[in-house]
Amino acid sequence: MHMKWKIITCLIFVLILGLGLPIKALAHGAKIEYTVNMAIELVATYDNGEPMAGAQVVVYAPDDPSTPWLTGVCDDDGRFTFIPDTSRPGTWVVQVRQAGHGDMVHIPVGQDMVATSGVGGFGVLQIVLMSACVIWGFVGTALYFSRRRA
Amino acid sequence: MHIPDGFLPATVCAAGYVAAAPVTWYSIHKINQKENPREGVPKASLLTAAFFVVSWIHIPVPPTSVHLVLNGLLGAVLGYFAFPAILIGLFFQAVMFQHGGLTTLGVNSIIMGLPAVVSYYIFRLRNILKKDSQIVTGIFGFLAGFVGLGLSVVMFVVILLNFIPASFDIETERAAIYTLALAHLPLMVIEGAFTSLVTVFLQRVRPKLLDDA
Image 1 (tube, each protein chain N blue to C red):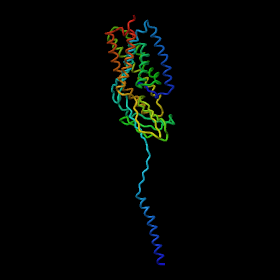
Image 2 (image 1 turned 90 degrees about the vertical axis):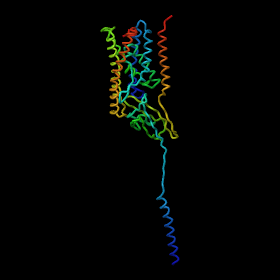
Image 3 (image 1 turned 90 degrees about the horizontal axis):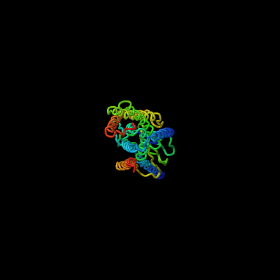
């Protein structure tokens, strides 16, 4: 009998040890969950480079272009950041408006979305060249109509 | 001053085109009644170029900045050529630089072109007084430039205030519109002074160019 109690006591000890160690290990465990969210940062500026500080922003999801998905305001640098719902892939529309001025941008968002950037408008050189072409058109028209008739 | 695409309901954009069409037709009709309609084309073309490019000249009026329009000058110097000239200038601005937009071209042409026609009639009032006096030309030139832009600002503000989309905060947008309208007050004086200078200069060097008015 004495021997029997020794075995039982030993088994109980092993059982407690066996159950106790994992409990101790779980208490020190850590868990990291992650989801990839692609944030979209907009910078809204006027033609002269001035930021559209305080401009209102309205974001429309692709499947509901009439109801705003998100509204907000640009910061002092004309920046606005939002994380689109990638489960709603398609072309997201963002409208920035201040005193009847502003613009609308179409941003493609999908499951396999990669980081991209888009710039609306033109560079200074492009603007100068385009203006020069159009002005030359007007000057040419003026010259054509002011020529002396033979 | 240029209302971009997507900022006005489709009905307003359509109404803008409907309103612009008869004004354009009437302007061309009046031009065709001239003895030599081609005669006014060179100066109209050059001033269209000026109108096209001048929107890049920004004048800082804290807390915002405004750009020159020159619709009063075009009205004073071009007469009935002013409306088609502004329409063409706005078309190029919309296509090349997205200043304004193609859907809002009609509305924008009414906002800027109709006051130009009014400026033409204001400038013509100098004929009642001494037409050859530079002081009279200067005064009416100033009024043409001042009132031309002033009327545009009023029309711009009225249209925008009445069609703020519900998705935007109406009070914030309204405050921003009023701020922009106030910023145009000094610009009205600048455009008046500029129109006055140009008309007086033209009267001194080439008075024939002011014959329309």
